[in-house]
Length: 85
Image (cartoon, rainbow, N blue to C red; front, top):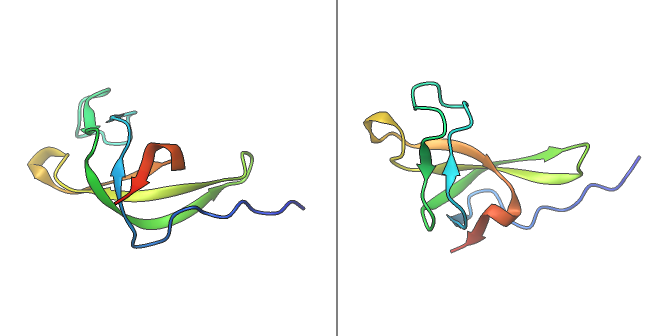
């Protein structure tokens, strides 16, 4: 058994995208490789998971208005892809 790495960010925390995030196929209604989240886009952490093999937290962040119909999209990101507001 190994010790879980602590999450740097908290549930409900407002964050900003530090990289552009493109569709990897997770959003079939959006063209593959289309931009989902632009650099600097604000979002909110809605869930925190954990990747067991890599022992790293994975953050589910809701970014608003970046899918067809300007609906919010929830995207799994790593710590280095977001920063606190």
